[in-house]
Image (cartoon, rainbow, N blue to C red; front, side, top):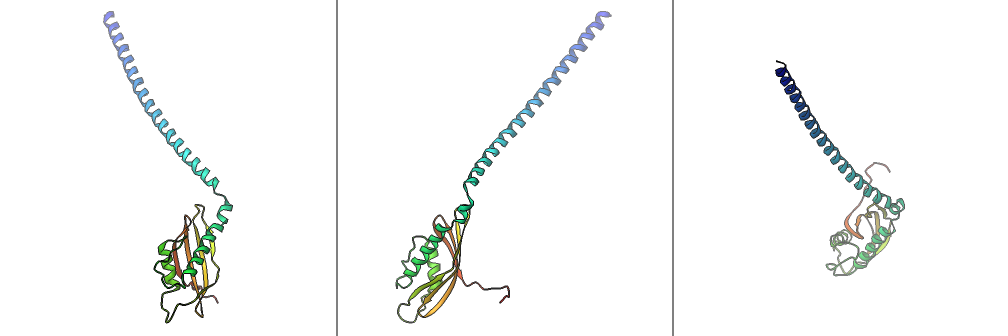
Length: 185
């Protein structure tokens, strides 16, 4: 009987030891999975940190003075106006081009300032003034908004312009008259 009890004792201890080892193996697998998850999270965090670092460097390169310095945007706008008022008196406007504006912008400007409805001869155009204000975004694009006053024959006309400037060219032009809708006088 003692041998029998001893065999059962060894069997029980052996079974218990096997269960303990299986449990430890399962715990080890769970730990490995947790470590892999944490490792992947660390990689993701490092990638995001690297991306944020690059973006921060780009933001550091944009200086407030760059945004306020609108001379290059203003130069593009003034070049466009000078080119257009040089083209306006010419009879053949179908081949009108600008070095600083797209063809659609040129067409829009010519249509807004000179629709071709002149009774006789070639009208005289003269740019009287422009009070266009320019602003610049951090990406280098800009806007020009204001009024252009010009002489068409003997009549003085004013037109409001909104110019969208990207990559050194005027890409969009909106023209018209801005009216005060606030009711103030």
